[in-house]
Image 1 (cartoon, rainbow over the protein chains, first blue to last red):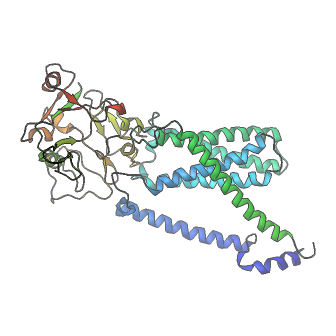
Image 2: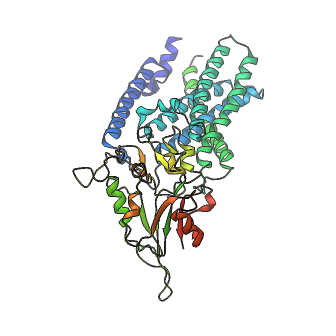
Image 3: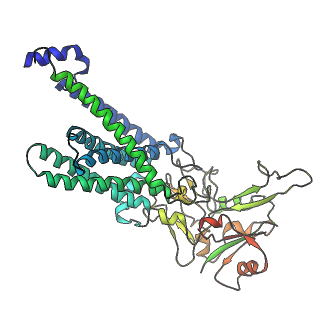
Length: 243
Length: 206
């Protein structure tokens, strides 16, 4: 067995995706990018957000665009992850797991983008001390936080179920809650923009369904891209000349 | 008390003395204006609309409208911008503001709110204007506050006093005997973007 895996791995030596080396390289690269990102964030805060190029007449830029996009990816991913299980469609187990994992990553990134967009991130605690519950931003923070915890619980339940523990019914219930929550989270994000009467393009009740349907498309794209990538790699490392 | 402004567009000449008075009294940082005289006419500032001899030109001074139903106060997640129940002034708490700029996005009157994108720069080495004007901070939103520090002392906002055409009037809209209430009874007026449902407290006499 060991000979086979090394025989198939050597032609793909630079992309040793499932080996210890590949993951270690990935971790080091990610750590370097993180440190760079943190350093740039400190630079942004100390030198002034004028460095981002955003100005007064249109004060939201790429950060909020990415936030919106990532919440959409996250919601879309979770919808395609949970929908098959809720409706009893078989055979989507692998995709489901990948989709919820990428969904969690996207949620964390989305929250990260909002935090770097803030002028005073050190005052984040005020969101919980002085919350204005009438604000769509506040609703989104509450729903996004709940959604993040729920996605993690869903992933944990999925892994637990695949490991043999936990019932299919309980997983199906969690899937149903996740499905509803995913649709809700991107609708609430849509309302941040859609409830602004001064912005005519956004100010429509259709913005919620618009965001959710776009999220579905993006989520399917992300899920199918990741799944095909993993399936291709998995096929390559599991087939061998003598198996 | 419901403080409001009445601005006589038939008198306003667009000199921007109010703009400068405001900047001075509140030590407003460079590149930020809390009020401006906007040209309602041609495409460029101080140009009329139409072709001679049918030209028209007027000036609309725009600052925070201190709406009765402010879109900004509704969306601020921490309540840093809020409507003062006693005076009706929409105030801004710089210490609370987290710099999310949602108020700037939600306000239909684009341009009245400014964000300090960098450490505030001032034209002078010393602070100008009122000693009790709130100190400006980097990375928070600011706007016209109806010179709240002056109202607390019983004075009128800085933009009111210096207008050479005597076009600006300030007072309590709830008081039927105030100057502003009387002007609104006598003259015809219009408001900015009434269809947005924000119920601004600024009236423009036409």
